[in-house]
Amino acid sequence: MISQADLLLYHEQGYIIIPDFASINECSALREHAAALVEAFDPTSEPGCLWNADLPMNHVSAHFFRESLNKASIFFESSTILSNGLMHYDKMKTAIKIGHALHDCDPVFQSFTHSLRMNQLMQALGYKTPFIAQSRYFFKQPGLKGAVHPHQDSSVVYTEPLSCCALWIALENATIENGCLWIIPNSHHNGLLSRVMNEPSASDGRRFLKFANTPPSNDNLFVPLEVKTGSAILMNGELIHQSKENKSNVSRQAYAIHFFEGFKTHTYSHDNWLQRPGGFGELTLSSNHI
Image 1 (cartoon, rainbow, N blue to C red):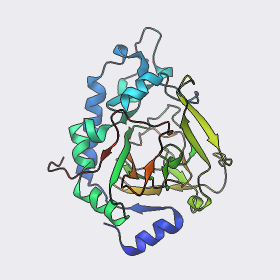
Image 2 (image 1 turned 90 degrees about the vertical axis):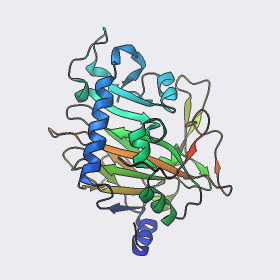
Image 3 (image 1 turned 30 degrees about the vertical axis):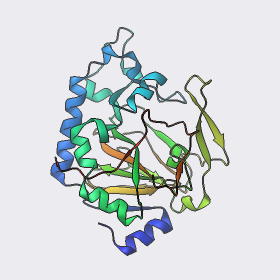
Image 4 (image 1 turned 180 degrees about the vertical axis):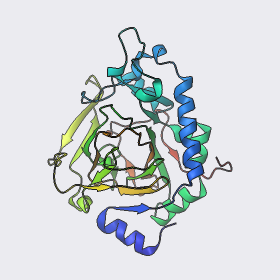
């Protein structure tokens, strides 16, 4: 899966690229299944499914987001939907993401996630009891806002000691033009810069605790990671990364998973904003394959 040299590089620079992590056929199957989920969903039945890139929370409805932690919920760009619930455009052109429990609640993504290769990867990284915090499918459609500001995943998936990592799998070619990931190599060595914590009295249920400033999106320390379909990017939870708007005429679809150590040596903080009702599930080994 990954060599000892890959592992050393991961610890040194905070990320590695794993070519051909998923096959072309698997990527195609996941894209087709995601499209089928979008096609089957009626956005007018759930006003909370809207996503607004201009809001700090992004999710228009905090309630819909919390429910999505146990579902495969679909989010649509709010500016593409009229006041009567009808859409300006085709649904696939307005879908932002599916989240946040595809790994548990959708049989196709569950099979892909709980696979032998995923278990081997987590074992190679030294996880004793890998837990999954959330899984998300990103469409990154042309013409939508969709930029993700610089951040660290451990700010949301915080454990003591720190243990978060992210696996981002390109289901289509990711380029600078269509919104590939941008990272600051070695930035994980600077520690955690902020936390997103639970705040029941807030409208969106969260508050930000900032330890140090995150670099602005135009910082020249960022480098783009252009990858081919099927490649995976493995990132340390403290690595600073972002993605920019899709300025091309093609989508940049991807599937991403956040892992953390669930063994007794680590504690998932009770004051994390990201809390899944019923608790988080462990990475297992599925007998089915897509």
